Amino acid sequence: MASILQIKPIADVPAHLRASARPQDEAFYQNPYPFYAQQNRSHPGFFWEEYGHWCFADFKTVSALLRDKRFGRDILHVASREEIGLPEPKPHTADFDLTEKYSLLNLEAKAHTRLRTLVNRAFVSRQVEQLRPRIRQLAHEMIDAFEGEDSVDLIKAFAAPIPAIVIAEMIGLPAEMAPQLLNWSNRMVTMYMYNVTRETELDANQAAADFMAYLREVIAERRKVPREDLLTHMLTSDRDGDVLNDDEVMSTTILLLNAGHEATVHTTGNGVKSILESGLDPQSLFATPEQAAASVEECLRFDAPLHLFTRYALEDTELAGIPLRKGDVVGLMLGAANRDPNRFSNADTFDPFRTDGANVSFGAGIHFCIGAPLARIELQEAMSVLFERLPKLRLVEPPRYGNVYHFHGLERLMVSWK
Image (cartoon, rainbow, N blue to C red; front, side, top):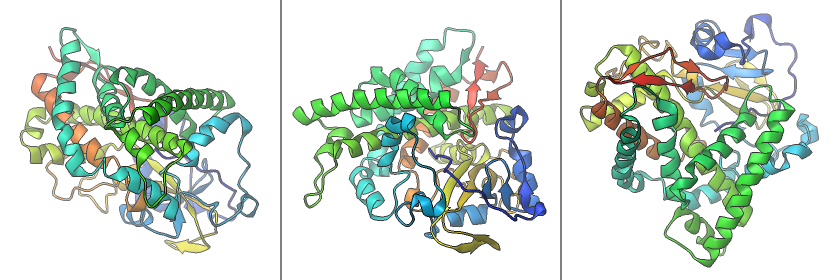
């Protein structure tokens, strides 16, 4: 997940470098790609009027920015709020802010390395490879539950529950808690949207408070009775006397649960939509492990689950000829970079057989998505089972994206297989 950072206004931006697109306009969030293409054709570095900060749309710059140490997710380790004009935290979002305080997504330097090292081993490829049979089992169970129906919302019945159950089980939470975890998560991620209302903030804060109250009980129980799970690992890992406190464990657990399913749900829905609309034979796209992997990478490129990731300039600097001040926010347009016509041939065509495949959907650098190996395996196995079991799968109504920009996912995906 990626939050929209607080900003201060930037003056004197030349008119030809300004661009306007309202994130909550239906025409935009249903299909933002024409706007992206226009920026990449004219000025890949542009000032987005509605957000009030510079954005970069081309693959080369976005890829480099993800690794550039002049920029970071946190700014308060190098500047005060007063120095950069950052507002004080809002009292009514205190619980939500606590869940973000120790989030791997926002930490920099030593603080980030410390936390990531403690949880990284659970997500390395050799560990998550062992989950393939469980993911396939879950995919079959989900299809068994709806196969007798005439049609189904594939997001609710298939895409959402599988990654939620997998990440819950990895952490050490019961699978039957998955629906409640999804509820808390879905309410919390509304905080990352454009132009959030006070009502949304209050609801997200309540979800965060309830989530933390539940985790406090689980953490207290796990301290008494350790298990072989990631939660126990986080609570008991000791690096030369350095251990995580309960708030750090809660922040990390909530991030893993939220991020551990959000992108995978969106990519599953977006990917199935892309495949069914492409006219290609779905089964052929998953006929071998190698082709399944390539098809998933093209799903990630073609219709990414996250379109905007923001960072702070940690010093006065210049990027693509644009002067930036310490504290300025820059937007990395992941969805636009994945469709950059200067990087990809026929960038707006879904082509799982392309030879120039790549994407920045999982980020790069120190904030490269820790769950990327797991997400890739979930997508490969779940979609392989889906098209194997339901070879006649088809759309029964036009898919519609939710009003959740900068996340990019379908409200529902109604399909039939008969």
